[in-house]
Image (cartoon, rainbow, N blue to C red; front, side, top):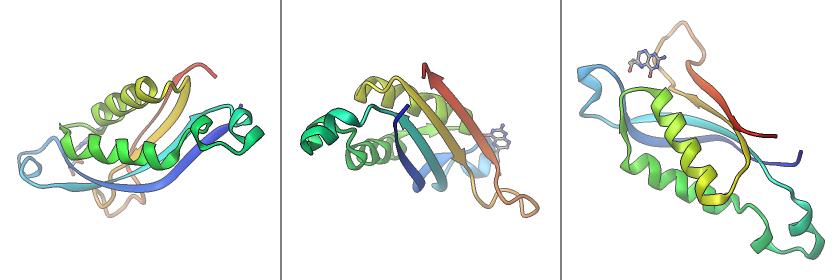
Length: 117
Ligand SMILES: Nc1nc2c(c(=O)[nH]1)N=C([C@H](O)[C@@H](O)CO)CN2
């Protein structure tokens, strides 16, 4: 399966389960792999037939700006569902990392796969 990917995208959002987190915005780092047949776009060099990673990135930024979740799980599920619906993506993998949560861990977060390959 062909994929379009976006790695290490940092977004600011209101995220966290603890009281002190409810009034601040924090950084999440996103890694996305999106299933997409790239051949139609490549055939005649047409962006219209590509999964435009600039548009996907803009949609992610809007989502992060508006969202106010406690758990990274909820952020991941809702973002995945929204992107699949908006861009007609049949399969994706999404890793959501919350940096700086635990000094002894290099990364904490969730990774999900949704849809059919
Ligand atoms: N599985 C999860 N565990 C925890 C989460 C989470 O979103 N998913 N969140 C927190 C707190 O918000 C923490 O990140 C604050 O530092 C704790 N555990």
